[in-house]
Amino acid sequence: MSPIINPPLTRAASRLDQVFAATRAQGRAALAAYLPVGFPTFSQSMDALHAVAAHADVLELGVPFSDPMMDGPIIQQATAQSLAGGFRMRHLFEAARQLSATSAVALLVMTYWQPVARYGPRRFADELALAGVAGVILPDLPVEEAGEWLAAARARGLHTVFVVAPNSSDARLARVCAAGSGMVYAPAVAGVTGAQGPLASGLPAFVDRLRAVTAVPVGVGIGVSTPDQAAIVSTFADAVIVGSALIRRLQTAPGPAGVRAAASLARDLADGVRRPLSSAA
Image 1 (cartoon, one colour):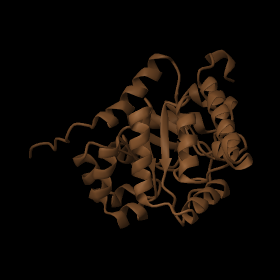
Image 2 (cartoon, helix red, strand yellow):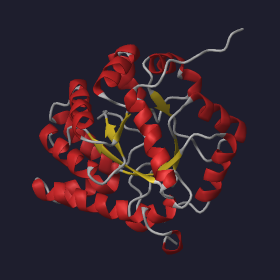
Image 3 (cartoon, one colour):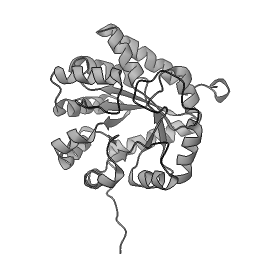
Image 4 (cartoon, one colour):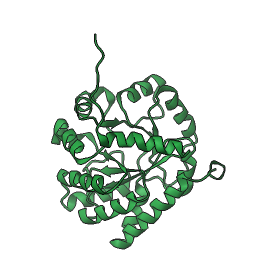
């Protein structure tokens, strides 16, 4: 049987690979920043995304969803406000088009599976590719049930990023990593997003386990909230992912002040991932 040959990646998807190549050459992790589209309004979310993009290497565009099982109160409140304000999927594609046209960051979309299934996987992949998105993070889609999406994503040259659990066997980690591409997402703490405590003590060992089964870059998120934590994670991961801490800044100071506060944190996080190894501990 002939091997399956996937279509080439889109230029946007290749941009994600280029980001990791560049940050590895610099001896640091990439900074990935997550914000939900439409929070607190579409216009203000675009202001925040543009401001944060000035300091991040990757932007994760969050799709608001009514049942965000992996997310804590901060993201739940933000996405609920976005939905109440009239978020529709067209706003996601518009945000991606604007950002891909004006920013050098790689764009990922983070979404639960139900909105994708409802919109139509092929149609969703088509729209993302046209909008300049590199790929999709699907935290609640098991690899065993991902066939329809993976076919649609591969046909359009998009990456698929799976979230992996530390209690998975090495065999399962290998299977999940082989199905995805672009990056694999490793939680920094157990539980939902928004944690502000210490990182899991076993996190470096978990990243080592992933590196033993895949060459795909490892991104660490869920529980990373400070520049000091970003500096530590940057010593052993390929990407540091921060979301809830940025949203807190937007919630604390509404309007332009909140955008400035989020941008300030993004700048500090970017400084964190660039700290010399000896000063990160």
